[in-house]
Image 1 (cartoon, helix red, strand yellow):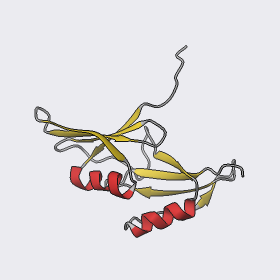
Image 2 (cartoon, rainbow, N blue to C red):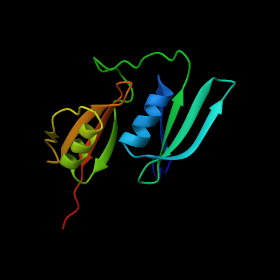
Image 3 (tube, rainbow, N blue to C red):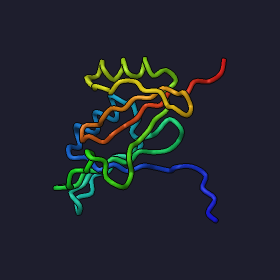
Image 4 (tube, rainbow, N blue to C red):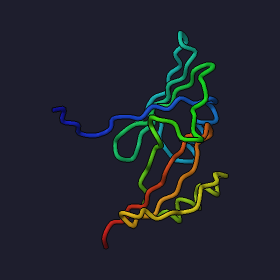
Length: 133
């Protein structure tokens, strides 16, 4: 048995490096850990810090195929982040020009959540987790 401790990173391949870098850094507020251009691959690799200590790796590759999203394909479905206040998070997205879907309620936990898309259509979920007061 393997004893996993945490997710170290999630990797995303984008179609437009500049647009995606701006989205993940400015719209979502992730901090840059490292940024490297790999000339042999004509590829950028951007390491971004997630609030829980994990990382998001953003890659660019020339002529990468589009991700099938609708209808949903097998494989990784979406990326989800927790937030303390879904309403405030949605207002922040809207102020940045991002159009999130309607807030839904998880039928099993009662938690509120909403989806939106990154510049390449990757589905991202915000899941409200409140701490007891």
